[in-house]
Structures are given as structure tokens and as C-alpha cells.
Length: 125
Image (tube, rainbow, N blue to C red; front, side):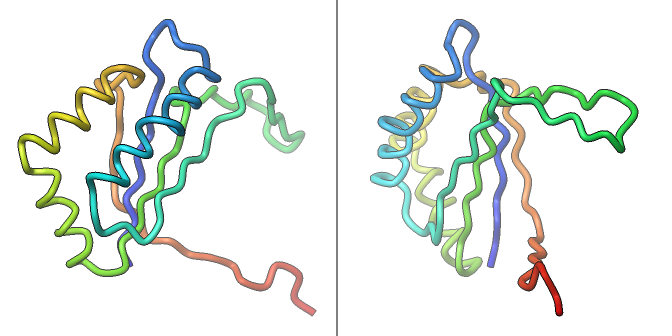
């Protein structure tokens, strides 16, 4: 399985709520319509209204410089390549880019592949 992570920041002037609403109601639907191959497409929105300050960390944690962590998984490399080939089509990429420009700070976007490790049994006996 391949997992691609994107760290995306909202465009200046948008609230976190406006950003999330546009992403969920418009951009996600466009991506799912145009791009094949996803096993999953998950968005994890930063809760700017909540803070986490664990007592065991002396230094104040740095505020994240993004608003959503996007996870895209592909069952096989062929599935990922199918999506990448589709995105290379100028008509498809133009639609994705133009829509992203409406609500994303595209210049700050970060993308990378990750290897996932998961702990299945959280409370061993």
C-alpha cells in the first residue's frame, strides 16, 4: 500500500470553518469525480480552538502552520500511477489547480509519502 500525505494551509482571509466547508463540499467531490485509484481519501482538520499542552513537555509546542492533514492511500503502485497519469492530463490538472486556488495557500503545501506503522492491541494483557 502507498500512502501520500499533504499538509495544506487555508488561503489568507478564510476562516477555518470556510476552508473546511469548501474543501468538503466542493474540492473533495471534484477530486473524487476526476481522479481514479484511491483506496481512501481522508482529511484531518486541525482544531485551532483547542490546545494540547502536556505537562511532560517543558517547551511550548509550536502551532502547526497548516489547517488539514490529507491522507491518500492507494492499494497498489499501479493504482497510484493511474491517478498520477490522470492528474498529468492538462484539462484535469487545470480543474484541480483552479479549484485549489479558491481556498488553499498552494505555495505552502507540503507532500510526501509515508510508511505507516499501526499498534493493533493498545492494552496488552
